[in-house]
Image (cartoon, rainbow, N blue to C red; front, side):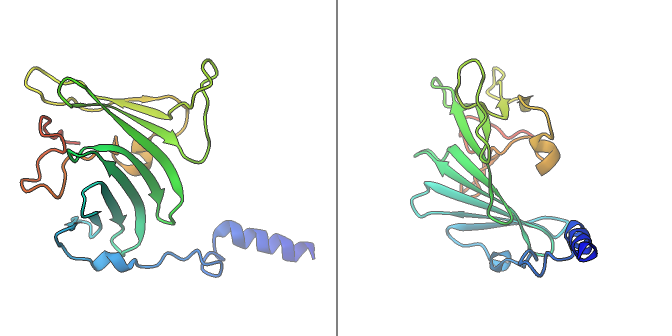
Length: 195
């Protein structure tokens, strides 16, 4: 009996039972979606794709990242304001597990994005001094006299892997809105910054 239990634990540890438990990653039906009035598809050199879909009222933007084999790897759902700027988003893994909640802050004087706050959706972390929920990471931006946005200034507030180490980008902010005619910056006053 102990040998059987030990073998089962070893097999689980190796991930060999994942297909039997429904853990196999399947090709998403959205992988072959084509551009349309509310859909934009970005095809990347490595064969992966990013699919953007929006609601007809432009208040929700969904971003799906697919691996080159068509497996959904990340889902981000943005809530947008009336100007098309994101005010918040939720980030899910490829199995629809909510990982992060993000809020975006804009400067009142000119509407420029100045801060992102990323919260852990699985565990509420409280600031020991205030008792308020504490973000895992803060991403701040400054602007020069011409209105050009700086590279992200990232403050990681808890130890562990950074968002960039896990997802390959410094922030979840949209550089451009794929549904704007000129595909310019989400904020009309901002200019995109290369990453």
